[in-house]
Length: 294
Image: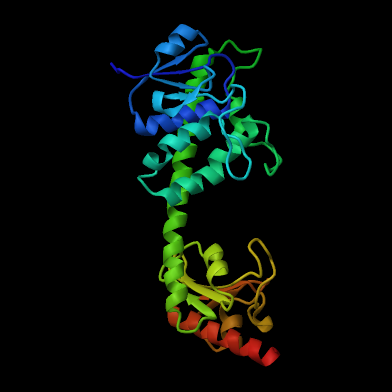
């Protein structure tokens, strides 16, 4: 039996209260959850979220519905209960890594806060995560109990939160690895990664000279990929050589003289060979081709 009681409102639930409970599960493995609007019960709870009209993290109160709300971020997005919970517990949930906590806030928490508070500028169109959580509520044709549906939504949200934290952790680790590769590059135009690591954002931030990135694929062979002009752009700083377009295996080997060349995409943004040495030869040939074309 647990000594900690967490209270939130009953009835229809939303992403902010669901994710708040999911977040608290990361730091308080065992607690009693009470969904109510009974002020006496709320007053006796150890932690209260999204109900009660009080924001005071020191006493475990995390509501944002009171007059004036509960503050907002520097970008103007107000805090909902999830954002308030994340302010207090996010760093602990992320193992003390502030960069990871900030990344989860910008990628997940602030979006849910924005939707809940009606601050929809910058929120992408389509079915949002907040709408997905709302669909766990029983419809008028169902006999499902709200509290049971809430528990199902929390289980779902817990997995989403765990994956956001894992993704943010990977992103922070990748940044350091790619930054070191940029710094150590023998030729600043060709960045070599010893293992595949998400690289585009860091390369763009740190290198204006990089044209190609060489890395091993998950299945073993090596890849050479072009650096796009801008993040999300299909235009490259320098494409792979035009004569390679759409060729694979023997056709590409005949054109390049590289006996283990595997392929070059028709879009000239990625190619590869069986070995690192051969892929670096492709990089050297691509640089030479671009120099001759200039």
